[in-house]
Image 1 (cartoon, rainbow, N blue to C red):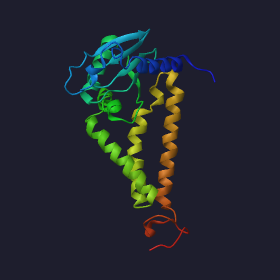
Image 2 (cartoon, helix red, strand yellow):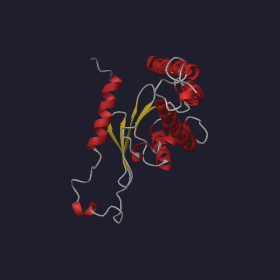
Image 3 (tube, helix red, strand yellow):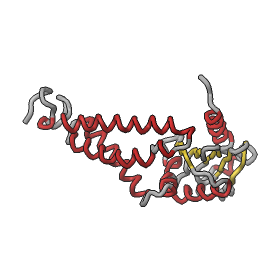
Image 4 (cartoon, rainbow, N blue to C red):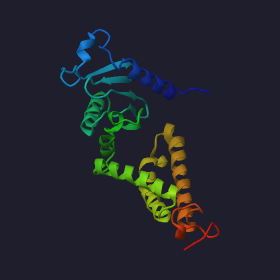
Length: 224
């Protein structure tokens, strides 16, 4: 498999995030870190670890890294609070005026993605914290309703409507940089395919094992 320049630099960014996670820990006495809440944290530091690659070390919060490319900025982890995310954006702006094109969250832990709303706000989306919470509830609840066949038609309809702005806002391949056209086109068409499946579910109803018998598709079981 051929590794592109961006892919290689991404792996380098990930390596930097791991290698510099505790830059002072080895040189400091271990008792300095025994009582996390009482000790005084080390100052937050932004370090350039390679050409166009930067690592943000935050002793009392969470670490991040970002890579400046020709197409834009790749951010790895957005920190653990929207305010910390805004701080990261400000630090990026001091380095470059290129737009943030990609955000990668390496863990499903809050300290790695709670800063995401700040990056959504930077994209011009209003009330990003509220919309993020609504999105999480919508996707999880909708998926469970479809999986269990409980009001599956309504869940499919809501998710279909939700996917319309998401697809056009985040996967606008017609406005993407040349290096991102293929990637964004793939995601755009993937969402279109999902929307087609949701329309099918809305029209035909769930299968024979659904919790609500009155919603089952014709020929799949008893109906109310």
